[in-house]
Length: 622
Image: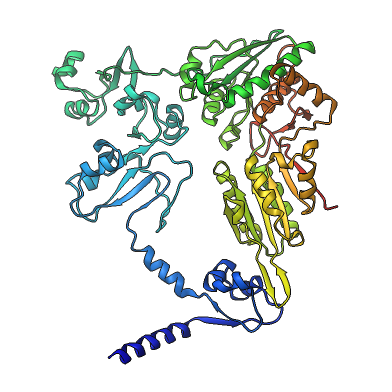
């Protein structure tokens, strides 16, 4: 019996081996060449042949070429996973004995939210095998588990999950209904305000609701019943009749009913847009709208807005000494989720330019409010395409895609089929994805994104006594200084003749003007390093030295990136202004400030002016 079992095992293993494709290593062959020949990745070859990485390729070696069998097994394993997720939801398959109560506790979600997202499944109770949607908590980088499914478009009838950065104003624009309608349809908004991850009912029609004097004024529609109205607006028949005695005679289409708000409701009334006009006087008046979050004193010192403001103050001092007479108003936009109430409380009639806010949604709200006013708005950080619709808007920070496009063009000039590695961090994942897709589309390249420099691999194949290096291309994406240092240390371990190295955005180790950085620059020169940047500070320039002295005299340190941007943006805008505070007629001039070059122009069909002045820095080999 033992002999029969042994024979069966032997036959099974022989058949398995026979199904695998093999290759006999010949002289001068490399892993890179073999991978290209059989249409597999180098990683797959190493995985199938662990001894290669340890001993290198040897002439006459018989190596296994991985085939479709392994991928088929992976597919079979993947189909066993029934739960999956996308950017917004977890899709949960109901198991035996699983209850709504258990799910609400496990995923920290209310029963009302579950029912709003899954009305059909929960109408008659849970059933084993049903798939329901559960809103995800906020994550820094969305993850997708196997099996992957296309992102589902949220049906407003089933509820909408509020995403990070959205405001009631942006949602009202997105769904073309009024903010008052949102408040009326979603009682939790009245007491809690809008929160990331909140599930909202989307009003189907705008104009039925106006909120005034702490009541909802609702216009009765055809088909409305008293029962439906009291259910929808969370009241009862006694309260409905008390507020609207005429209801006792029946509802009529067009009748305006008064309905109660929730207890402790806090309704933010929106500022009336289109009423403000720039005063064409003989003054320069600027407003800085920045999210200091002044109530949180602990984080104020390291606050991005505070650092921007520090740079702005140095700029204003220098401009004043140069003879500019400037009036400055500073507005704390808190977390920038309540711009409308801030606008409603401010007198902006004597304003020539607003610099800020920081978030794109907040900038859009300000631009909408000031449409046609003649007041210029400068967006110091946000570069979203939605900003292109506003003619009085200047986008000061070049879009990151502009920087990426420059490097993509550089790579394409010498690309010869190499493996491309993109090294990045979580803050630049979107930019990396953009770069990856562009390279794959234009060059048909194999592009891998990694978050640790040690994951960049340059295979070294030893055939006999000769080393063969596989050519690779590396691109660091982002401005993470620590990752930049790790990038350089990793590059030094590679054979410089078989690598092309690039960078998108700048980090400290790229700084060609820092005398303490000479050794790093010399190391980058060994690779003919090229990087694109929108900010570079020439510390050898006399004007730059004077500005840095101003920072040192007041703050005793050199400016950080946010402080450089604060100085550059404010100095550039005010310097463009004439004595009346007008600068919109002087946006085309090209200026280089402390670290930023400004060259504003309208791109394509954009109404806004964008700074399109990214620079390419080359470090040629010696």
